[in-house]
Length: 375
Ligand SMILES: Cc1cc2nc3c(=O)[nH]c(=O)nc-3n(C[C@H](O)[C@H](O)[C@H](O)COP(=O)(O)O)c2cc1C
Image (cartoon, rainbow, N blue to C red; front, side):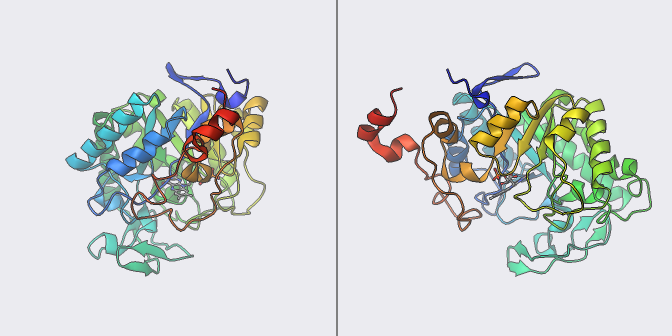
């Protein structure tokens, strides 16, 4: 039995997670045009069940929420069935899997919506790179500011997606409020310039997230719903001067709502807005009393340190887990890692560069295995 803090079980409100390693949500664009989860996606997740908790790639709650080529979704019967086959395989392999709920808002493009521009908190477009559409890379467009009806319909879409995720057999939900997608567009004071009850004060900017949580909590208990936040992130043109006050307020609200976990992208390796000192897991530990998951840029040693120091309960790993399907085994036995810097196969394609990576044992062969691994 390992003494590493990463390999101790964790009791998540009555669900026993076998270790502290979380598969970070990663969009891989393998679901095809109908956005139905398929067999190679099941292979990918099943191969990573050495982790105590897996979080799915971001998956749209509605056609309006789409904004990524070939990402999976959860609003058709076939999509629900596709996910069901994946949750069953993950459970049979002894792990747990959470569904990440996604709405891209202004990070989308009219090519995803039959020519209609996407909507957001305000009619303010992303200043930055281009968006990948089904018809190639294009400039971002100025979104339409959401009406009250748009907001009510979107909240209902989240609720229906929560129903569908339950039907698909997930162990919980993660509301994606990070990385500059719709909910983050409402939280951030630069992308949200509304003057109604969804804009202005911190309380108003937080309102959409609060109402979405209330809707999904009609379907799932609060203790099975996590929220992902990126307080330091710049991705999709995020970052506002009052980010500290904002995310302090949000974490306090989520604590009061007793959501099941907070997933904080505290590391800076996914882009930093540089508007002040980064917020840390220690900051969030003071604000939120449940399961706290850290992420971005962690390796075995830094993850162990965070958990041992008491700043986090679990750590999510993304990029290293793409090319190392058996990452927990490699960490536990100090096996070498495959490099994971090459982004060329991250998005789109088939099994190649996705579900065809070998475990250390497979790649080292039986002869060398007996030399390095007594178990
Ligand atoms: C290929 C790829 C796809 C990603 N897709 C998502 C996603 O769907 N949802 C999300 O919240 N974050 C997404 N992220 C961010 C990761 O969850 C994670 O925060 C990031 O990779 C940093 O962690 P790491 O340093 O362990 O890789 C993605 C990252 C990568 C590399």
